[in-house]
Each structure stands twice: as C-alpha cells, then as structure tokens.
Length: 488
Image: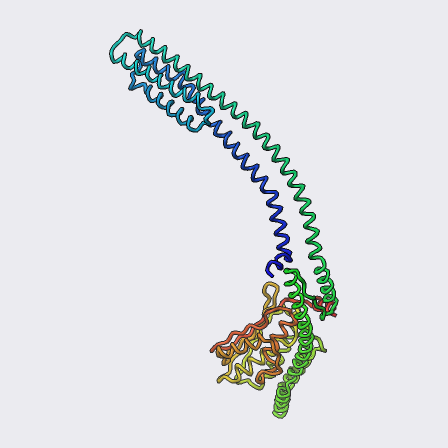
C-alpha cells in the first residue's frame, strides 16, 4: 500500500524526476571538477617546485663560490661567513623538493644533491688548508674546483626546471583533452535530460489534470452559491488532502452563511430591543411623577426644565430612525438624561461632562453613552451609601474618538468583572442587565458590529469605582452617507 501511495504522489513524482535529473547533470560536473582540481593542484605544485629550485640557482652559482673566495682571500673567516650553513640549506631544500617530485623527474635533483656533497668536501679541504697554513695558491686551486662543482650543480638544477616545464606542458595537453571530453559529455547529458524532463512532465501533468479539473468545477459551484457541491475522493495523495479540505471548507462556509443570516436577524432584533429599552416605562413614569410633583409645588421653572430635558431625551433617542448622529446630539442626549436623574437623585448623584467642541461635528453610533451612564447610576452610585460622581469624557486621539464614563460608585469584585467580560466576549445581547437599561453587553456588541472591529468596551473596576471606555474611528457625515450608499 505504501508503495502505491508513493507512486501516486505528485511530490514523489516530481522528487523522483528531480533526483534523476540532478544525478544525470551533477555526476559529469563533479567528475570534471575533480579532474580540473587534480590538474590545478599538479600545476600549482610544479610551479612551487620550480620557483623554489630557481631561488637556489643564485645561491649555488654565485653566493657559495663568492663566500668561498672571501674565505680564501682572507676577507672573512668560516665563523663569519656561514658558508656551511648556506651549503646545508641548499642540500636540505634539494632533498625536500626531491621527495615532492614525481619519480621520472628526480634524477637531476638526486645527482645535484650528491654533487653538493662533493662541493662540501672541497670546502672542507679549504678549511683544512687554512688550519694547516698552506700557501694560498693551493686553496685557489681548490676554489677553482668549488666554482666548477657549483656550475655543475647549477646546470643540474636547470635540467630539473626544464623537465618540470615539459611535464607541465604534458599536463596542459591532458587537461585540454579532459575539458573537451567533459564538454561533449555535458552536452549529451543535457540533451538526454531535456528529453527525459519533457516525457516525465507530460506524464505528471496528465496524472493531476483530471482531479484539478474536478476541483475547479466544484470551486466554481461554491463561488456561485451552490454550497451543497462536494468533491469525490481522488487517488492523488496531495489532492486527496486538498479535496478533504475543500469539502470541509464548503461545510464551514455553509454553516457560516447560515450563522451570518441568523446573526443578521439577531442584530435587527437587538437594535429593536435597544430602542425599546430606551423608552423605559419606569423612567418615564418617574419623570412624569417628578414633573407633577414640581408643578404642584409651584416650581414652574423646574417643570419647564424637566419637560424640556425629557423632550430632548426622547427626540434624540428616536432620531427619526437614524443610526448615526453627531456627537453634539449624543452629548445633549446624556445631558438630558442626567438632568432628569439628578432631579430624582440630587442627594446621591453629581455629574460632569467633558466632551470638547472640537469633536462635536463627528458622527457616532447613537445610544452608546447613555446606557453606560445609566449603568453607572443604577449599578454604581445608587447602591453605594453617600452616592458619588459620574464623569463623562471624550477626546480625539490619533484619528480615533475615545470616550469614557467613570463613576465613584461601589465598583465590582474581580469575580463580577470576570463574569461580565466573559458575557461580552460571548456577545450574547440582553434586553436588560439587572435593571440597567439594555446594558453593557449590547453596547459592546453594537460597537463591534457597526464599527467592524474586534474590540468593544474596556472595563476597569475596583473599590474606588468603575470606568467604562471605548475607542472608535472618526467618521464625518459624508463618510457615513457614503458607507450607507455602498452597503445599500
């Protein structure tokens, strides 16, 4: 089974073809490189040997006879002259080069090495004559022999260099033949490789063509909305995995489309509940009772004040059905709400609104701030002894609008805050959260859906109170209308 799968794998076929092509192309290249490196090394070693021997010629032909003459003439002593050191250096160098030379070229060096022994013997005679105080004339005769022997060694070194040059010429001819044969072999290998590649490519293309055509047909059906289209199993290993993934994708796409339709219905229901929750009967009854109570007390100015605030509150809540309103209207909406509630909870609630005029003309999704203020009042200040302050702030930061509703109320425990964040993460809208309007979860969901962003509300809470903030992009009236027309 494993062998069959390997034969029907696209990767296996391509890998097999690649390996064969690489072997066909690389072996001649490696062979030619090895041969070229071998000949290059031979060239290099031969040149080094010739340079070394050439450097000895001056010492043998001139330096050693000259040093012997200085000793014979009395200009220098053996201790000052270092004649033996020079001779031994030449002998040692010749021996080293002899070991590194091919056997057919060693004869000249072997003879030269032996002749250097003869040269050293003549130098010994000069030393003995000087120690015996023989006449200079006898040493001059020996010096003539030294010069002759040195010339003989120099001639032998020349013979060696000539032999190395001849060997190098033969290597050059061999290398030229190798290069020509390698080039011919490479040409033949390339032709065979091209033929093999063409034949194998056609077979591989036919192997995968039909499954891919079926894949294209199903993909086209899915793109046109036929989410029930599925691929049948294939024998190609890689395409079998792809087939399963495409079928899985089709299943998930169908589920997502169904969920999207369901979420759309839930969103519309949530928006309806949002508007309904704003018209809180208890809030309306209590406000009307407060107006009646103020009227009976003869406080007409407060009656006018409450009536005007209530009118603004409901007018902006409805906004003729518009989803987006200027920030100035949203500010006026929470001002009306807070004015009404301060009449009822004057002893426990104070408020501040810090929304600068520089952002008043930007548009925002309506009914985002009022639920947060209502939550701060009912779940923060109302249940805390002594009440507190609600502060609403807004600012412009790096192209975003940042809003915050902060209260000095009772705050939440870490467990309560964790539970609330989990509810917002799940995104399950609710009509009410313990009497606090349509609640933080709904506001969080609306921000994420309408602004198409992953984050919504950010909540921090502790013994000193709670702060609820969010950040949304700046949008002008023109951008809102443009987006609505594109969506329509």
